[in-house]
Image (cartoon, rainbow, N blue to C red):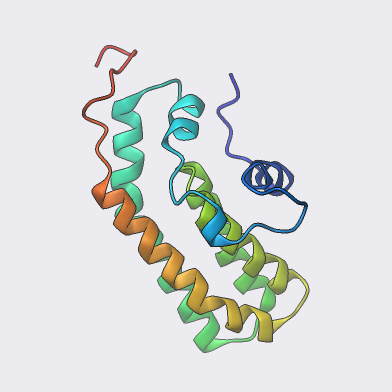
Length: 150
């Protein structure tokens, strides 16, 4: 069983499953949270899924805050890239596909040295993160049987 978080190429492949053509998917075309994917990647361990999601409620906004601070204080594209990459990884860990897709676009723009695009994507990134955190807060895994003794 593959429990690793998807890398850039796997993320592109994973997100492209949700669209009909080869363009980068829009936030609207992706799931905020793919709970089935999350559970399959962690061996159907519902308790661990709950723990990951709970941690994400505080962790995702903190990473976004660091990205905002980086943007406000510098034009160091490597630092911006690293913060976007970190946020993408955290989103990937919980199968937050829409957030991963936006983070990938920010990360790519930073890698290309395109500050204008990075700044233009920030409102979409912030909104998607807000919607993801809201979705995490509403999700209930209580009805799912835990095959790992839960």
